[in-house]
Length: 547
Image (cartoon, rainbow, N blue to C red; front, side):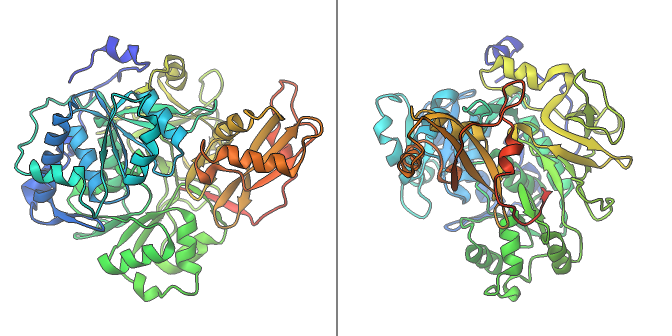
């Protein structure tokens, strides 16, 4: 389906200024399996807890899934959401949605009922692939979402989904014309205003990011096996895991456990060579005394990403693998990585790598003018202006149905990250201030405004602020400062606020510590001075930013 400019603008989106082909790579997700189908169709492609597929079998399963989704009325431009555990099913469903030209919306299984309802409502979802728990969670919402089709997908068990794949097992590839630059997925970012915004990406965006993820992979040996343990409902994880891996024709393992014992089990059983893990898990793998390092001997490379890590981790990593930890920086709106380091990059403390080769990264002042090296400004991104990747990169198409936010993030022909940073004479980028006071807990993004919105619903809360507390294992945890109405600064209020949070926000977002404060510190503009609140929190082990 080709979208014209007016259709995109009605949805608050901006069409890409250029439509350049991706060098030596599939041009869209719909054809991502084609190189392997031509070369190694019977090689094992993907492994999960309950199934494994060759590239030929995976292709057939994707066609079956697409045929089933068409019987539900799903067509190009429709939104399909999924809350499914890591495994082969979620990858099959994603690829099927892309062959139909539908728009994918991944929804974390751990989100509260209210959060899931918000995503369904905001995106206008018509089909929802859900595990049994999520399906039950949505049952009370039938009245509101009467037109929503919920399909139960329960890996390892017979379900509507598994029966449908058998029924349509011989289905041909759907005859749908794919526009690589049309909306293909909505990745929700935690809201700086209390409500998440949906960053919209095209199949072209996705494949550019997947192609460079594969180009920059630290382990590119023939026959390599890559594992992914972070939730595949997160678009960046789907891109950097299965899509990047399958595009090169190597083996992908979808890991359904994120505890240390579960990861060790997967590595040992499937002889995984490369993993992308949050720092907490890498730290545990390298330090816990009950882990037999012989079980991890197949591992040769781990990319450590998405959170703050204990300062000791880089040295532990170097001792174990014989090369420096990969450090980098990325964001949902890009999507995925913007900068990255490798063993050849200058090892400057605090650096987050150099721009990826297809990107022009600049540090701009408020007027949109590039600042001098070493000076602080906003980190901004656009396509490189020369070489084989000239004008190939396209950023997000914008925020779903949020015209003003789209215009703001894409102003002046740049993707504005909202992060303050600097660049040295070697081209290394440094983060100086994180956008919107983002809290990174064990690799999960938490925006204070989401939590503060819920806390302010209680009339006894005059005002509040949520900030990140350093944690030696998780990186950060949210803590809340409450300015209570007179006579209400009690433990009973705290317990009520915890109960208020439980059905409205995910468990990992609920503050771990609570503090009463007579008056929140503010500057002359009336904004809360969060640094003064951080001074009230006991000091923790020093941390270092990595990706």
